[in-house]
Amino acid sequence: MVNYVVDPELLYPFLPKNTELDFYEEKCFLSLVGFRFLNTKVYGIKIPYHINFEEVNLRFYVRHKGKDGSTRRGVVFIKESVPKKAITWLANKLYRENYETMLMKHEWNSGNSGLRVAYFWGRFRWNSIWLHAHSELADITSGSLEEFIADHYWGYTKVDGEKTLEYEIVHPRWKVYPVKKCYVDVSFDRIYGRQFSFLRQLCHHNALLAEGSDIKVKKGKWVN
Image 1 (cartoon, helix red, strand yellow):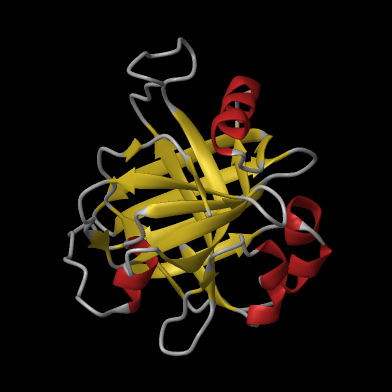
Image 2: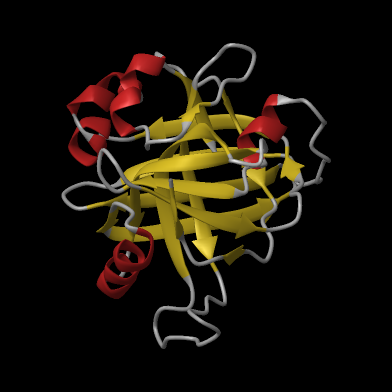
């Protein structure tokens, strides 16, 4: 998870109705996230050749206040890249997300110097995220930026100006591998739009490498 501090005005056009931007210490964060789906099932069924695959997404953070007064912290995805057309079709159909099919691959190497993890995706050139991290897991500190970035358990989709789809993401609290170095080489304008081109020159605020876990994504519902 590579995290950038951005102007909130950048994200308002993508903000779903009935949500508001979520801030950490008065800063607005945008994250570039790479991970692997492993042992994937759709309604409890494994689909051949669609069980293990990569995803890279660009996301930001929101809050939704329920009618009961509760506040749910969630994420909004600007775009999600996956390597299979069937995954793109199904995810866009079920969750109204902005999935796109691209060539993808990853590397995960461990050694005496720690972990080296990379994700690659693109069409005409490889875009990439590289992380070099310690190999010992650490707990996420309560109230930290790491907690803010990693502990979101709801997804929100802007279907149009009047409709918002909400879905729950269930997983235990993750641990992290402390990151030593991070390198990003991404054509943000080509993949995510011209308004994100400045990220190519912007230094990231911090980076995380999370342990991951079993995850369940529940069926979406409309938010009024």
